[in-house]
Length: 226
Ligand SMILES: C[S@@+](CC[C@H](N)C(=O)[O-])C[C@H]1O[C@@H](n2cnc3c(N)ncnc32)[C@H](O)[C@@H]1O
Image 1 (cartoon, rainbow, N blue to C red):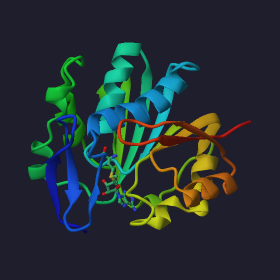
Image 2: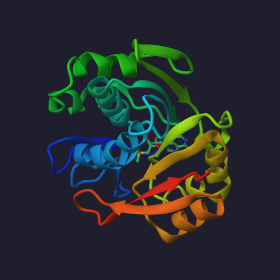
Image 3: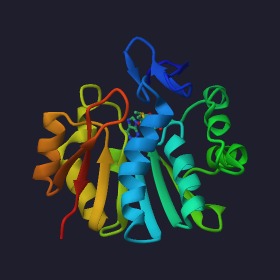
Image 4: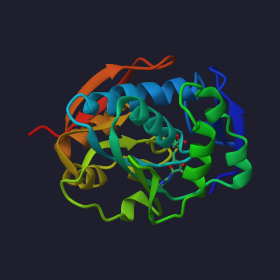
């Protein structure tokens, strides 16, 4: 896989750059603000208006920033979350120790210890991070994963951009996600590229554009309408 280095984005939060690829794990305009916007505000917050027991799938767990933010949101809003995160290339300890998210997320009690617990939890096992938040980290390729039908309320699609990894944005994979979702489930993602929208639509999703975070005009919600 690519060589990586930790860099600091514009809001002071860390992200990871793929050396020589001009590709980062998050927006350089602010990793934390981007994740809060794309995945929490236009993902978890929307689903939490309908239900309190929520099942999430993340494609590309990476730093686990989205896991931590979901945990924190769930604590604050009394949600019960079952989170499945798929990652093909787990990060080294050296990189994980250099990430500054728990220090920046100050309104979430025990964020430091929870972040450690998330990263130290066993791969391919269901682990209780708290009484109301369970996590299953799957080490593997999102393309080969078997997903239960009618199971997830929310998908965080956070793969590298479609130019770098087109197979993770294909109609075939989106169809698999579609069947794995419950009616009215939302797949939220940062990419609004034409090929992404077309692939999502032909997989059966209804597309809604949403305002983007700082540095980006729009993002996408793909909804499994009933
Ligand atoms: C844009 S980064 C995601 C960042 C992550 N959500 C975070 O907040 O740190 C894309 C992630 O997808 C992972 N990835 C790349 N190809 C994959 C594949 N085929 N299956 C699963 N994960 C993959 C990468 O290793 C990386 O962690």
